[in-house]
Image 1 (cartoon, protein in one colour):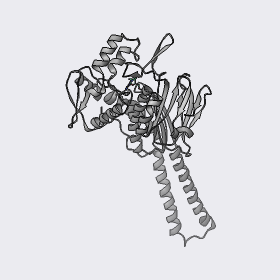
Image 2: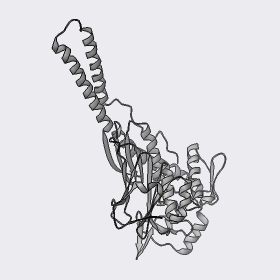
Image 3: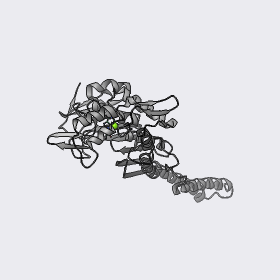
Image 4: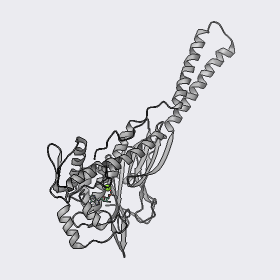
Length: 391
Ligand code: AMP
Ligand code: MG
C-alpha cells in the first residue's frame, strides 16, 4: 500500500534556460557597475555618465520582468489516471515539471500501491495473503495509513467499510453487466465476508483477517490519498499555486498569481457531466471531495442502483442525499468522509463531520442544498433548479 519511492518518477535536477539568462543579466549588471567605478576618473563624457546607469536600469527591468514571468508561468494538463480524469492547472517556474510529475505519481500510486485491481500493487499483495488465510507484515507507512483508515471506519459507525469488495462484485456496478443480486446470496456474503471489524493489526504491525473472504478496497479514499501525496510533491517544487483534480477529489494548493481564490465547481448531480450546481471559492491547501449517485450506476425502471453501498443492507445507500461534498485539509479524510456521509445522510453525519473538523454540502433528492456554516459564504449557487436551505 505504501508507494515504492524508487518507482516513482522524481523531478529531474536542471537549470532552466531562463535562469541561465537571469544569471547572465545579473553578472552583466555587476560588470557595468564595476566598469563605471573603474573608469570614473577617465571619462566625464555625458554619454557615459547617463548611458551606463540607463543600461543598468534596463537590465534590472528586464530581469524583473523575467522573474515575474517565471512566477506566473501556467501549465495545464489533462490525462487519465486511477481510472479517472486528472486535471492539473499549476502556476510557477516548475509548473511543466509538476504536471509531468503528478501524472506519473498518480499512475504509480494506482499501479504499485492502492489499487486492488493491479496485480503488482501493495494492496493486491496484501489481499492475496488475506484471501489465503495468512497474516501480513505491514511497513510503518502502510500501518499508519491503514490505522487511520480503520479509525475513520470506526468513527463513521461502519458507514465507511473498506471490506465491501465481495458485495460490490455481486452488484457488478463497475462492470459491463450490473445486476440486482439474489437477496440470499447478498446476505450470505455480507454477513460472512465483510466487516472492517474483522481486520486486526498487532502491536508489531501484522495485519490479519478473521475471515478468509475478507479483502481491502480503498476505492472510497484513494483519490483523496493521491491529493495528499500530490501536495507533498508540490511542496518540494517551485510552484506558487495549483488546482489538481483526481476524479471526485480536488486539491487547491498555494495561491493564484494574482492572489485570487480558487473556484471549484460542484457537479450538478442531475446535469450533464461537467455542469455545476454551484461553486465554492476557496483558498489554498484544501481538498474538496464529492460522492454522488451519478458517478457509477444502472437503472432498473425508475430505480437507480449506484456504487455507494450501505454496509448495513449491502444495497446502494438510500439516505435521501444524491451528492455529498466534504472540504478538509486532509485528502484522505475528505474522500473517506464524503463516502461515509453519503451513506449516513445529512443528519447522522453532523457529529462525524465535527469530529474531523470538516465542512460539507449535502444535495438531497428534492434538489435542496444544505451547506455547513463554515462554507456558507464560500458557496455560490449557479443552477436555480436547486434551492439553498437554511437549517
Ligand atoms: P467515492 O466515490 O469516493 O464515494 O467512493 C466510492 C467507491 O468506494 C465505490 O466505487 C466502491 O469501490 C467503494 N465503496 C462503496 N461503498 C462503500 C462504503 N460504504 N465504504 C467504503 N467503500 C465503499
Ligand atoms: Mg470518497
